[in-house]
Length: 289
Length: 327
Image (tube, rainbow over all chains, first blue to last red; front, side, top):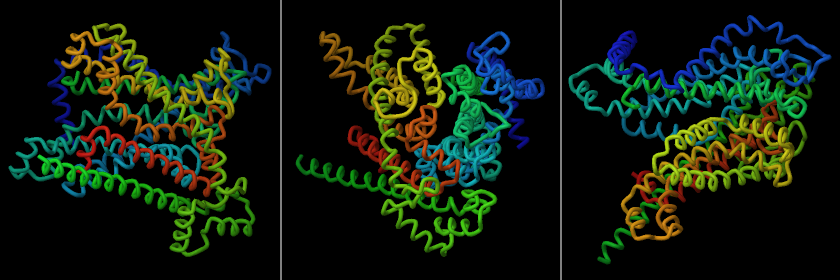
């Protein structure tokens, strides 16, 4: 593993001159700025505004946006802006946990099938393809039904439901890399299988996988929020964006901003992560751009 | 000459038979897995599924009765045989919440889901094609600004999941502009916003694909020839452009059923539509296992069936699809 890392680092160092400025596109800068902001919010928002976000002001419920409450207040007179910012942490943490499960399961499965040869490989490919054609949310709901509604059920469900995407990707990459001439040459030269993997295959599928992982973070975030929106994820007093969206949609006529704000936050995070995936892809693989 | 033709015809029949068989086996296997998974679901619940339904302080007699209704008291194999028998006769038991049979719930609630989905399919197919063709024709001569605007807008819409689009659409059209009704089901007007929420993202993706295809087709020699012959614009469009652009549209429409069913689960909450997705979400929330089993099998079956039909259609139109599968 250290060898892989050092190879990756060496490759990065060697490419640096060519890669110069690849982060410096407008979308690149924008997505990095948004991502950094979100991470900072996730770390500091609950520390700074936890108390204030729970402060109820019964005389001032469903207030429209004003200078005091930028996005208005909810049914208990709580400030929606602060609630949304505080909820960043749980939203990102749940997305990250589900992404970890999806990547761990998917990449393992993809490697096992991708490195296998012949009949087993095509069988595994068929299974993953059939799985991919099935709506992920149905599988996620079955898992939630087993584990029970709640944050842990939600991230587990999304993690498992999204794993075939990573499995398919890893499988395709592994198969295409192991068919290259240099892998065949190494195999003929008697390089042990483990070394072929760490020395030749892993470094060459790494950059594409990294791209998929960044893009997958946004998808996981949106999907976990969807479960929370359905009342199957986070529950009060803990809040994430999906749950705020439910509360907002319930009162969309009285306080439309309360629904629009969490929706915008989820969309913003999802889009920023997807763009970041593109940026990372270009940075890791300059040939592609 | 005749022999080669018959040989080719027979070869193609064989190819068709193998193609259909492979696709059919795959569909059946997915359904079998679905039945096994939904059966195992209740058994995999940590602790007592009856307790999940009735709560912590439930009466032991009621718990035993619930266990019996879930079929958890019999031997494992008998349970499975009963379950499969139920699935084959479309009998999934009765809901714990309402006492209605699950098949009646499906029959009652299928229309709001189907209505929005059908409208969404029309939106994706017609809208995606028209917008893509238009964008392709417009950007044929280099127009960087139009091109960037098009790919920016379609890119953002394509990423947004249905429930966020739905919320934003409600906010825009129902709350701010007050053009369209939001909640409930019934009239066609109430299905417009849900259909847009479901269909706009796939439509945007389709429009992107169609634009690229249009540009490719417009650059072909036969197009240049047709233009140099001063073929009328409409014939140029119907005879040359449209048939060649349609190819990549079908696979996208085939994958659409999964997208639409997945989306409708969440979208129906946004619009308070009493459809199958909303029923499923509620069933999962309270642990109404017969409802969850019945709906997952039904919705999964719809996805399997539609993707099978789409595969066959794609193979009829484009023989390369068929050959790729058989090989």
